[in-house]
Image (cartoon, rainbow, N blue to C red; front, side, top):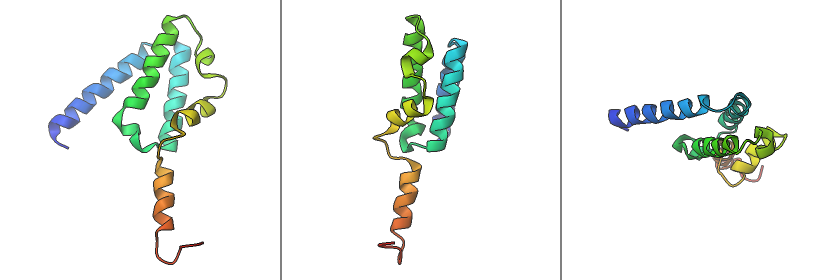
Length: 108
């Protein structure tokens, strides 16, 4: 990764943060909770930015339609997040695979 890639990544992240800040307050609160949850769960492809920007797109559309954020995602933020990443590889999966491959741990 070169310097230009880092600079471009920072520009994209700042633009993303600006979009989040433009959301209504209830949407921002829920977005931050989703972001915190996903950073803990750690989908491997989270760093590519498509998941988080897709959530912002979804929230912008919901806000424009006059819907409350919980109308879009339901009352359980964690369940919403789990559904988003149910088919994604997580860092927990990577770790589990690495410890199951260690010599002498097969079958344990």
